[in-house]
Length: 123
Image (cartoon, rainbow, N blue to C red; front, side):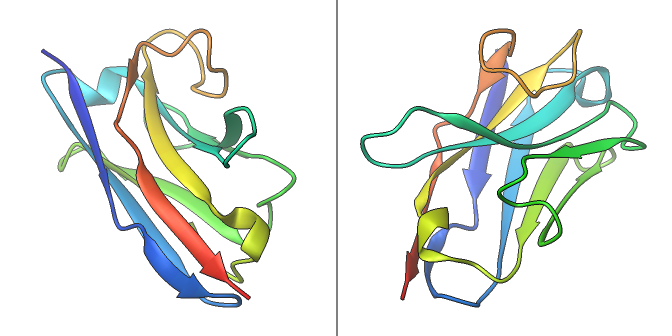
């Protein structure tokens, strides 16, 4: 059974950085585009970043573009999200998702989801 497990969240001051990880198991990792989404309290889940199957193409939401980097290590079955210059509005639960047939930038078409990791940015 496919499983995605996020880690790396925590409490950080504004201006700081975090590196989130998502470890996949039970699936052929390189056959899936991977994405990161987030959901703040009282808000809908939103797209943050996505990466293609081989890692050659990346996509970012405007809200994190220029201060985030998504990457993947297919040998380790892991996708990463580095976020720099964190802002209080980045506070959310961050989820990773796997999409076998499309770039993992949409909620509706993602095949698998992790349980999420909390990121809290203090001002």
